[in-house]
Image (tube, rainbow, N blue to C red; front, side, top):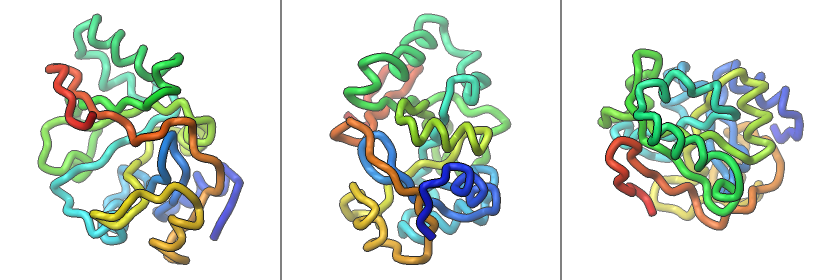
Length: 189
């Protein structure tokens, strides 16, 4: 199924389906992060080990606020600033944050922290808001393959096995950089 309806796409997520959708730079695969069966479907499609963990994508800071409360105020401000303004348009930033009891263990993989990004991409924002929370976001490609940059490429990888939310990619040329919020270490430049 291909749709341009954000409401339909959010309903697919709520029903435990895997959704391919455009993000800031590449197409992503998403699901309800609290639905372990849907999450395992993503790993199966990607041929990705569970130990790697995935990114959670939010449409607004309030959806991840509970993960920001324990941060040092200066670090918290840096994280929030990276998700807004011109910095977010040039390159999306994903932050490794301390996970709380609300983050399922399968999302983190073998890591003690969780990868979080608040998107500035209008379609991602609308999708997360329609779903009423953050969603899984991992690149739409089998492990080791180049991430899809179009609906056609995503469909070449996954065919009719998935649902697709058609739309345009954002303006970023590369997938998000990943930074550990507490140490400042750049995990993916």
